[in-house]
Image (cartoon, rainbow, N blue to C red; front, side, top):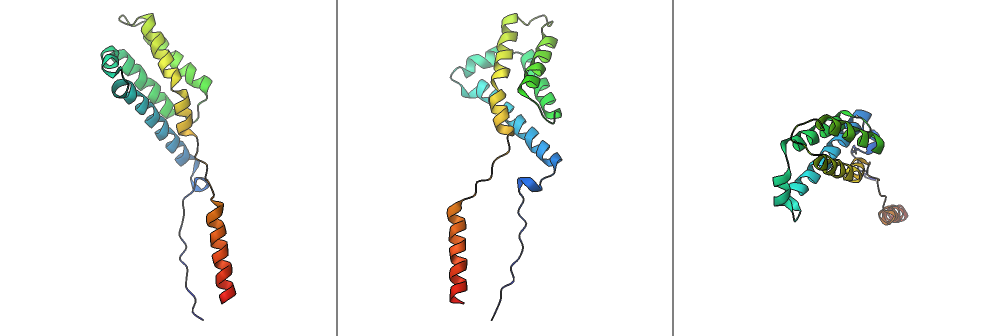
Length: 147
């Protein structure tokens, strides 16, 4: 009887990743979510041309600060995120050419991104397909029966 040697294939799964790798993935996904939201605001929405005209250098710097602090954080709750936005907005409230309305709009926009950030950083659940597992079991049973 001839037997085949099976080669062991290593599969990387979420359980095999180190905590540092998981944090890196989360930070990367967060950065991507914020970048996508900003890109949509400036280029994808119906009012994109108008939005690009409204964006000021202080707003871009403030968004960069929020993004940088998000990347530095290992974990962040919604309350911590909103506090971070408040801190950054507070720093820009004394800037000469910034109105209270612009600060409020910036704050509201940044807070509206929380759900996308949270969704992007959540680990993906592995879905096990029962049909595939059943087919494999049936095939193995059939081979044993014929052997």
